[in-house]
Length: 101
Image (cartoon, rainbow, N blue to C red; front, side, top):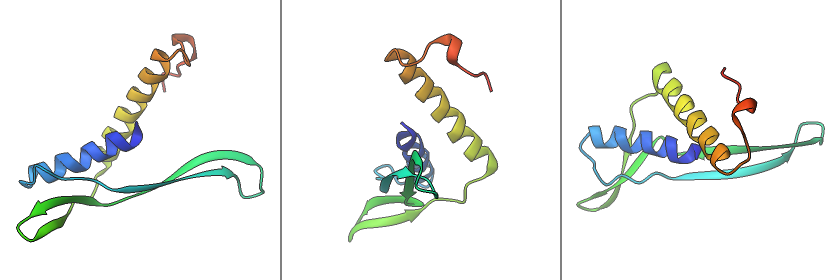
């Protein structure tokens, strides 16, 4: 869900620059341990800072403008909203377990 939200942001930035067919790319790695080899599953994501769009000579990388604090806040809020909605829909979370912060 997080990758969808971030990818959408990058595609919107490219669309604002006139590239309607942008495609994102990312690599995700699931790490199952912490620094002291304790069980601590978490995810690392490396994402392109832009999109690839079709050009006259083949795919062309289109860099996104730098992220602002407002962009980060929008991405975090949208991601949290969608993840909570998905978990609630699947019965993994109910209204009593949602932290309003």
